[in-house]
Length: 164
Image (cartoon, rainbow, N blue to C red; front, side, top):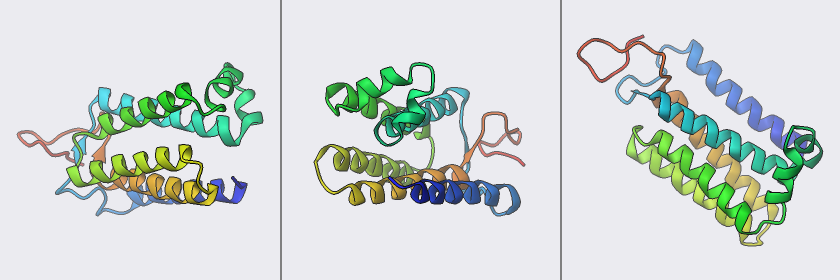
C-alpha cells in the first residue's frame, strides 16, 4: 500500500467531514438519526480495530511502535483464524453501531465490509483489495456525513429527528 493511497483516502475523509461542517444541507434532515453513546462507541472501537488490522498488515513499523503493537502484528499478520475473527468482530461493531441509520446505507456498508474481508483472504490481487477498501471507506464516511448525528447533538422536542 502506497503512502499516496493512504493520503488520498485521508484527504477524501477530511473533505467529507469538512463539507459536513460548512454545508447547511448536511446532514440530510430527512434521514438524519442521532447515534446513541453505545452506537458511537461501537463505530469508534470497530473503526480503530480495523485501522489496527490494516496497520499490522501494511504499516508494521508504525504499528509496532504503539504499545501492544507487536502483539497485534503477531495476531493479524499470519492471516489465520485470529486475523479473520479480529476483522469480522471489528466490522460487525461498525454495522451494529450504524444499525439505526437508513437501511440501504447500512446494507451497503455491511456488504462492502464483507467484500473487504473476502478480497483480503481470497488470495486475489492486492489492487482489488485496496479498491474495495477505498469504496468501503467512502460509503462509511458518506453514511456518517449525510445521516448520522453525534450523541451530543440536541434533539428537537417531540421529534425523533435532530435539531441544529
